[in-house]
Amino acid sequence: MTDPKPTTAPWTPPEVWTWDQPSGGKFANTNRPVAGATHDKALPVGEHPLQLYSLGTPNGMKVTILLEELLELGHGDAEYDAWIIDINAGDQFGSGFVAANPNSKIPALMDHSVTPPQRVFESGSILLHLAERFGAFLPAGAARTECLSWLFWQVGSAPYLGGGFGHFYAYAPTKQAYPINRFAMETKRQLDVLDKHLAEHDYLAGADYSIADMATWPWYGLLALGKLYDSGTFLSVHEYTHVRRWAETIGARPAVKRGTRVNSPWAHKPVRERHSAADFV
Ligand SMILES: N[C@@H](CCC(=O)N[C@@H](CS)C(=O)NCC(=O)O)C(=O)O
Image (cartoon, rainbow, N blue to C red; front, side, top):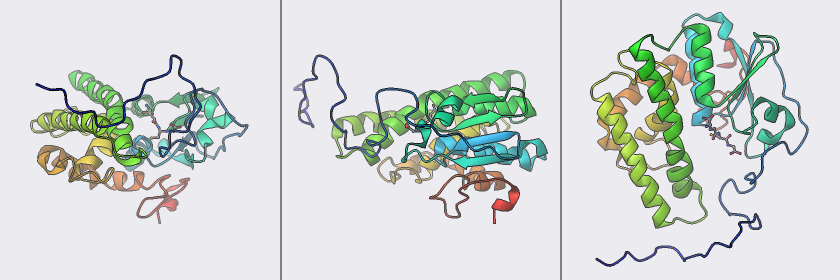
């Protein structure tokens, strides 16, 4: 068997990588090989104990969906201020945001219900922090372990979907066969993992809707509904019938409809910043 033809011009990496040329990709203006703040900027603080600094991307939506679900359940203490962080403008590198999340990525939460205020970063950690604090959407016993397994699966898997498939299919300056084929393969495998599981379970942790579903829906649910990267036809998402059933059920929840609008300039009815229920007009 002959080797397949290379589909991109071969490149010999230099002995030592240096940051000397823009990548040309969608996030080329903000990507840097170093961490830390680029400028001084304090974060705004509103009146509620929970202060969220985020953007309505799939990672951001996870948290606003949970907060809206908690409010829907009657947890008044889950009232929150959600401030928008424009990652295309470099807001994630402001000194206040870096103090909340040294990794400079949305979402980040400051929980002022404790003294001193507790910073929480990484979407999975924020979901767990809030679920434990309110005793909701995290089942007990064996289902708790199953819930956490899927939660960790999601945060470990989505970079192949977002940073891999989505980046090369939708954001890279040119379409290249090698990375798109590699990450389309992995994305479809992940969809099939979910589809096989959801063929036998209503929700990821079993019978009950949990933070594992809230973490996974904005990525794989929207993907299966053809709403991510304009890739529904390319990935034949109609094949994943169980994921689609689960995604439609979750998408119909009022709290999910509200949560996906928060900090989302591109939503059908955007709520750029959320400070109270009155913001959802
Ligand atoms: N593992 C992180 C990923 C967060 C993440 O990748 N956030 C993106 C937006 S979806 C971001 O802030 N990107 C800005 C940047 O990379 O500079 C989490 O789950 O919270």
